Image 1: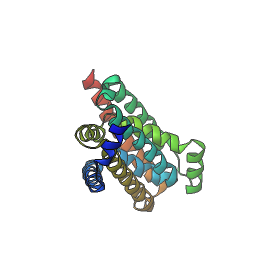
Image 2 (image 1 turned 90 degrees about the vertical axis):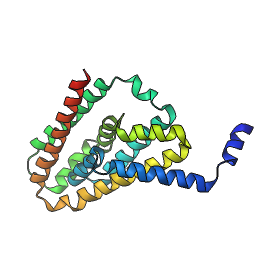
Image 3 (image 1 turned 60 degrees about the horizontal axis):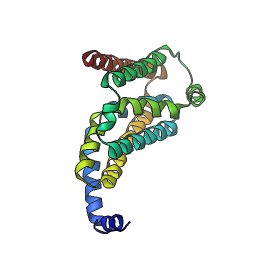
Image 4 (image 1 turned 90 degrees about the horizontal axis):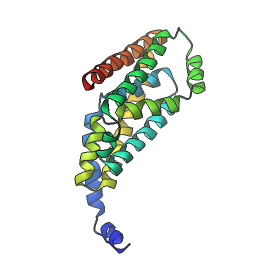
Length: 205
């Protein structure tokens, strides 16, 4: 207990803020335009924003906690080929579902999302898609050389910020498009991710 108290007493708040700020900027820059942000954007354009945000936040809390706590050993537990295969299936299912949706009112879209547990769907999709991704590996590397708690705080806030920005874009910029076109675009995006992930699975075999 004395060693633990000495550890915390030796850490200054300016140091924590500095480390958290540095990790925030690094992860934020790395995640802009990444697949998780696009997933949030396309889902929020079709469904309610809050479940998408909450699902993304919970996913990133889990992923960053795993990265900081267990480090690179986490990724070695599950072969990359299995992770890529799961990601491929998830993206393909979401993409095909979006392409098959007929024109519907916004109220109907929100109702469908609620009945199908959009929060859980977002959580699972981002958790699997981002497992072992460059941002999680960056968190692993940063936490191995700096204060882990500060790295976790900064990186989690950065990923939450990019997710919220993605949801905002989906609820504002994309809302100007017809709902049918929106479904088609989001479906094609998911299918594109599925194809890319399938290619990664193939080369990992």
